[in-house]
Image (cartoon, rainbow, N blue to C red; front, side):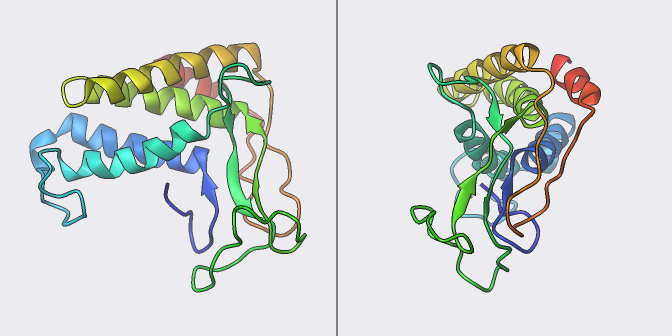
Length: 184
């Protein structure tokens, strides 16, 4: 997934709206985004580059969903971030070393806002990718449906304050707009 701003945070809410913007741009004007137009590593694979880039983040978003059989299954973790803010010129904390209060990398708990961002974005992704990659489309649709049901079952799980000084909270205690977006 993409890093957010000038640090090593990866956020489902920010990633969701950004991915949706790319997908929506393609859906409205597909001829403006041909394969090879962005000069990215995936250029030349027969898929419009804007969709390749959206898929990069969508794969991250899918990975942030709590798996079936786990508590809060279907919900999406709000973000992943270092305990301490670390700027991009500095290497991020190792994802396997969470023992140091100042340097650990943490997966924050699920939130309803993140879950609904996943539901909305994955549903749109499923529709767009249906003719391009049916397996990926089905993964997205399954994730969207699971996220929607999880959000209905857990409508008021809000992102809390991040421990330490790492990254913004991007809190949202009114998710009516996300429910509307995901329902559409």
